[in-house]
Length: 382
Image 1 (cartoon, rainbow, N blue to C red):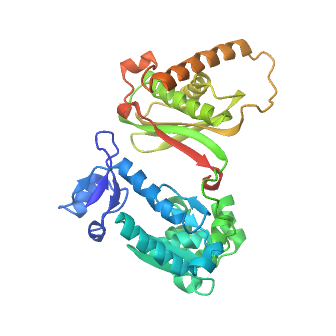
Image 2: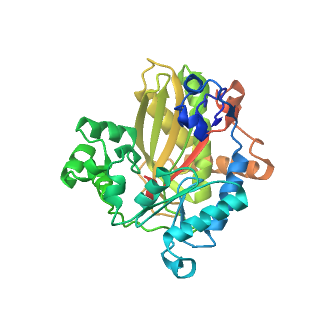
Image 3: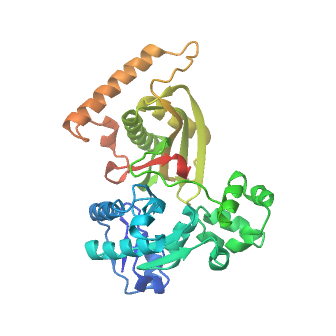
């Protein structure tokens, strides 16, 4: 059995799989066709996101009875710092097993817990033994326990990083930990040193307090369209929808953006990215749209059709920040745009999200249900 996305919205990939399916080689991210080839009797269910959120919240409420230092990592994972709780509840392994048993009894879910002296190894431990297990990685045994594991199991060692390391004959965490930090930086850039520190268990990053909000580094929205986009007009409609969504989030967070990034994925799954700076920091949807579409027109060559588009703003500042205005900048025009968009947002807030929208949407945007995927990147995950 597995949980999969919506094929009609071109999200037909495996999101989660049972241990039985896993033994057939079914992996998260597999296309449905790939999964069926591996496991012909596979049953694929639709995701129930509301249930997922509700159970995740219930599990976190159990965590909160043991510590107030809880840092979410995605929706269904979190780091807990239980250093200050050990006098009451016992050591880390004892607390982990108690939480594991409570979650099973109160929600019916099984969880896997990693117990360690740093966040990176705690995360690694939670992935080492599943389901319904606790893995302890200590300062005394971490080399013996994890250095023989594939480098791809280390947090933030993505496929591109793994591919680069493999070229140098580095396949395990221990092999990477044994190179010099200068060499790690040389072959992987500025992130290489941080990854090398992680492999050696050098991670002093604290666990955040529960509910503490990390500074937002960027706000963006992206969408995989239900059909490939074939011309500038179709791309503009999608960019406009995404820009309004980004603008609303910027406004709700009290932020303005100084820079913009547009990512375009073609139908051969190749991604092209373009960046630019705004003349003046903005949260205005029209300005975001105009600049994003300008980036597209000036840089994209129509050799392939467009599969997905992402509009992301970064270099964020508070709306009340003081900035220098360039000579010739049309502030009157900008104020009119802001008035229009404030009215637009006011109507949506009062009468619902679909109460008002761009007339261009009537032509069709090739967006699934006109619901772009939303993403905010906090400092810790940049």
